[in-house]
Image (cartoon, rainbow, N blue to C red; front, side, top):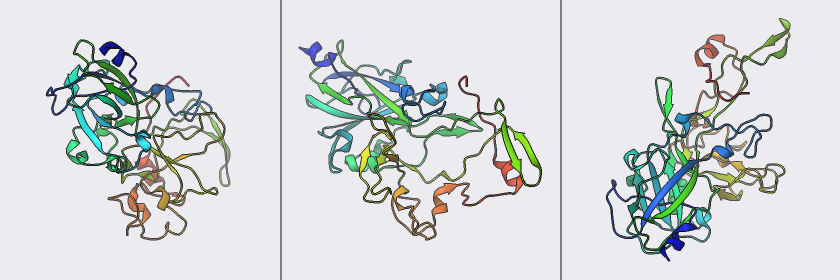
Length: 326
């Protein structure tokens, strides 16, 4: 009975506290970066794109993770007041090389639980403790990776909604833990471009015709204020995104049956970036929603018109890192 109770599980479990064991069922969690859904254009890109690229090791490395247990029929799209039953934390010492946790005991009543997984934030339980599902969904993440002298690591990843994200606790023994896998995806988006191998024909009013190649790039209007901890997409109403647009948590931009894009990923301020607000002090960089700051307070390198100062671009532009074989 115990083996049957755990063999069909789809998603995972964790350790309470700082690796201390508790009472109840034994669990082991495997976390898988969502490389199969990588966003990349070669040539079409997007979630079902035909040029999926697995990424660099440092982009997919998991150094720590949080597992949130809750119970809700609609899972991540359940009502905001849905309670979080428990939050567990694993540091790297409790995670094996294949991103599988050591078997641990969890003190929760037997039953079926829904799960959310967050990686590489460090131990932020004190910030999440006491929050309901709505509070977790609205939690403002101000950093999606770590950077030191041009080196990047600890990219934050969260559940992507592509797996069942459920587990059944039924008194599993240590030698037959509730074995489960959850898929996660990076909060940050990576921009890929073709560099020196491609020549572009250009026409300039002053200098005439010529060719150019990309030697570097810079992200303009880069969101700096923060991101929601959990991805959310909104569906336009009458062709426009508004504060009344239907929201789906951990949703996809493209419909499962194919076709044109229906949903758009929204950041904490997307639905407030209206024509009326864009020239007003209507934003709050410290919290999602409206405020009294200009929209440029949300961004690094904020530009709304063409910048023709060569020195400005020379300072900002950097070379990318070769990736893939295209």
